[in-house]
Length: 339
Ligand code: KG4
Ligand code: ZN
Image (cartoon, rainbow, N blue to C red; front, side):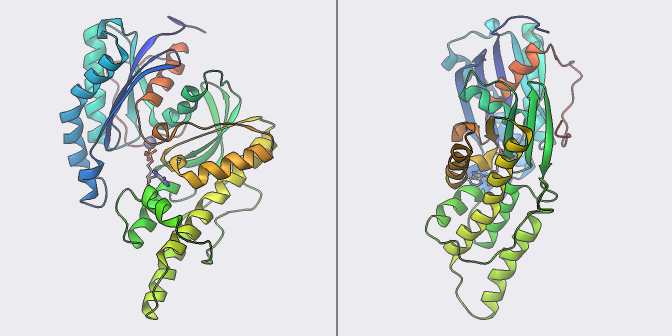
């Protein structure tokens, strides 16, 4: 059922972790996409300190939203709705964006839309290809979630399977620490892996060959053990080889299972989302695997894989079209189920 305008002007706001972001879309057309990150400050602490993230959001949110409106060339009075991430994420951080969005929507007398951050990652693909329509299979790999999903309609997706323990991004961050690389680890592991070879024996991460579930904790422990036992023997570890071998072990399985999922479900289109999908090796492997299987691949730009507000506005459009608006009593939630 269609409610309101076909191509509404939606402001998206994201503040679930260390990125304060705002974006404006008209329908599926992205008009602006602004971001302020506290990652460089967080890097000093080796991870995200929630209180520092909340304060950085509070300092940045007003200016980031103003900038998004200016770059889009729209006045706030022209907006049709405000979409905001209400979870999952750091509670204090979420509350900053949510409170701002509520005030903004209330002041303008327009609807508030509650966006599940993970559904935002899924919606990033809509910005890449305006013609994209379900059904499609999505490889979702972020710092908090890793799963293979089947989207049947814009508002209904099913999980084929996912990680039973750590998320893929979390594994990259932990292995980065073992290799003395800074936070966030993913891009640093990727850069180091480019100088190495896939020669370190690491375990397969599949739980049940036929299924879609996998486990990252065994792989992470294997990397730690490999480095520690080499150290104990007084041997120098080739860190680049470790990074490369870990990257292959962590990502090859995701590519293989995504393509298998599409074949099994008879779906011809594959998409991807989440910070780990910014990884060049993963992007190349998925591109090749989809081409070999005759599948259409819609891959969001790297900027729209890591946290951003454009994807929140894109999911806001899905919810707007479905007539799903949130009450002003909407609260932030640290964890919410995938669907
Ligand atoms: O989606 P995202 O920005 O935030 C969450 O919703 O979690 O994902 C962040 C995760 C981090 O664990 C980060 O290390 C990982 O994505 N990541 C990468 C790369 N860029 C970011 N992992 C592997 N390779 C990358 N290039
Ligand atoms: Zn995210």
